Length: 245
Image (cartoon, rainbow, N blue to C red; front, side, top):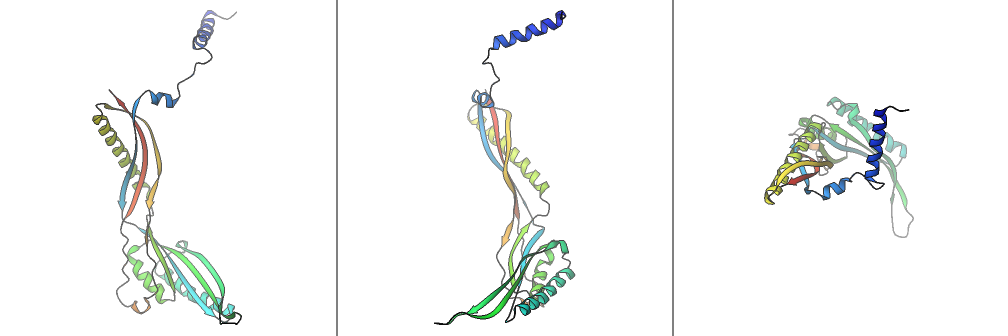
């Protein structure tokens, strides 16, 4: 036979179940919120920083009546560009081929079938430049080395975690300040923070318009000016505060 303490525990549990009935359940979070006076806020924390990384695309185009010659000429010119970039301090890990194509080009005349004119080979690479002080000089140098296309530049941050955390702190401060304002305006007091969630956000890269290849005769002049400006690091936060009497 069970001991008296164990029987008492069983009877106590049974009594609790009987009192609650089959419909007894814990209150849902939405029901709890419905019984409170709350303020729901969407706020953003924002920090600005100077970029320390640039991404830029270079391209080389060559044409020849022979497909093999077009590829050969393109290879030689792009090799010169890559050698120059390496000498300028751009690491191999920061150079990536983005496109390599060979196309037939035709001439057209009235009432005549298209006639093959030549072959066009295009090789495009995208590089990361980590020393922005050299960016303008690098652009001028690769242009002189045979680049025929220079794409748009995108500035970004190599490491943005610390700035994102600062933006998070700023968002939380703004949420608390705004909730306190609502509490004061309604004659209530700011209660506890009930819930908080983070939305999308992050560094916003800065894009610069495409460069035309018009610098070959200017390599002995001052480097092409390139201004990185500022990057915005933002974090969106959703917060719910309780307002009490």
